[in-house]
Length: 393
Image 1 (tube, one colour):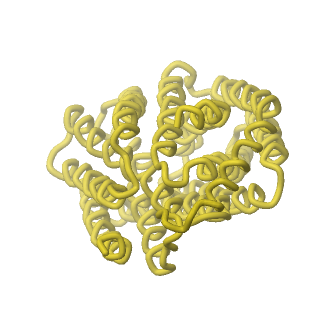
Image 2 (cartoon, rainbow, N blue to C red):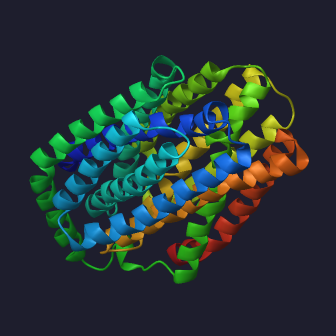
């Protein structure tokens, strides 16, 4: 385990840098489109849908490319393109240019996150703790990124894009330095895994129906979670609480994620992953249910606590569960995880904007999100029931 962690450090730092850049961009998107470019929530949602749609495509392409070609070459190509995209956004970020920059950003970020999770999957069969470890570093990036918003954003995106350029240049330099030996480590681990006796969990294939149900839970969970990434920012402003509170909520989210994930690295095991995922879904559902009862700063932080705990156990649990029941083509399977997640992120802002436009009620939106998450939890139980029955034999 310790030997594998030492080999993983370039990937962990890469995840930190890529997610720092990602976490600066997405909380600002709805705020910038709605507040600065004066688009309504449906228009902003459609642009976010296009961004997330390209994130889906990027996730799929990143998986395919990482299976077929050198991870070093693929990663360097995407990071170089991200530097160019951020440079373009630094100069042009108006009503036409910004959506273009955002869509390209979504495509390339989806590819990079899939590359990172696919390489982690090569090293982590039968050891779900590595996904938790990666998630800790990713969420340190979340803390740094979201905390930077309050400092850098003053109605100008140039400081934001400057930070993006710094992150991507650092990631490019790191990957050019360490990718080759890291590829060798991943290949050695993959060979070792595939030559192990067929008594491991990996020898039991994941039924197609279970895989589909698990992936669909990602879509619907992210449809609800995406409200926090988009429409909740407008809700907070409508409540007169200010954009800084929104930034503080995400900083709190990132810090709590790191704490929970640090605990999960000591407790996580393949056998408890299904229950871990179910608990996460229920916690996310109750976070929305809480926001239907009352409003205010305390309630927002309580809801964010439930959301964060649910996210911390659910999000790394899904790729770990799928990885535990599959061997080979890690890029393909982790690409599916990222792609289905991105579908939910794409649909969420649009559907949320439509609900608010029709019913003019954020609390009705939160109630619908809670109901959806409860249904998703029930669907997940049906999807993993064959795995649990088989393990009990």
